[in-house]
Image 1 (cartoon, rainbow, N blue to C red):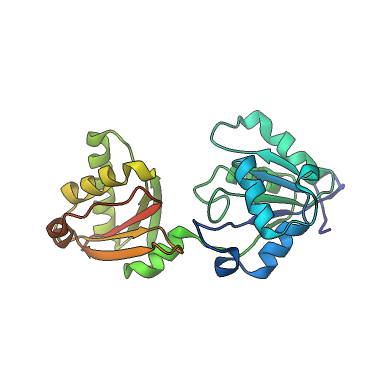
Image 2 (image 1 turned 90 degrees about the horizontal axis):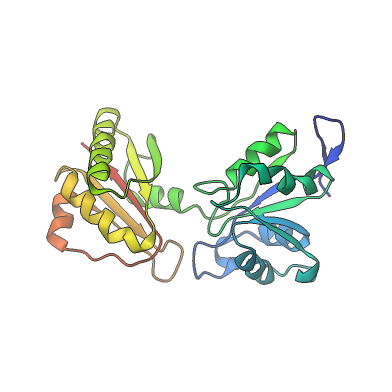
Length: 245
């Protein structure tokens, strides 16, 4: 057990940030053995969905029978008042794993609230190495990796989305900053179409779909060239990046 001393002087557990796969990938292809080993030995977890967390732990070869493993849920519907209860196993001295639905926890993920609370209580937070769709997309895009910003989900209202895109493109042009955003898979095409309609023809646009899976596809072109392709995007996880000149 990895323990530290909290603000009240009690011995606390360590909060391990445990990455998962981004899609239908074998764990061994994207996660170092130490991540699987850590997940396999823990008995306390916080995840977005208990069912998918159990499925991940089964693949990781968890040593304890799943019926004896405590899995608490933390998602967009979790109230802030519930966070202290989720933190309690750590305060009681138990190492705990924070698991996201896909990729790295606490990045574009509600788990960040628990990480912040852990810091407030002097609990050690240990991030483990795993796939980040945002960094993988940036690496493969060919766009500026020295200055970039992740903007999460853009407005779904067409007028508000267009206004936001114009603001981000202006920032990108002024600061040489690559802009990243994501969308719910079934709205990928709507966002893609808005990008083509709103951005300058000379702006570079990268679409990175289904990263680390057998269906991975990453393409970077100017908006003008994208318009010639009339591409149709899959309803699958994707990252959108653009850089204005």
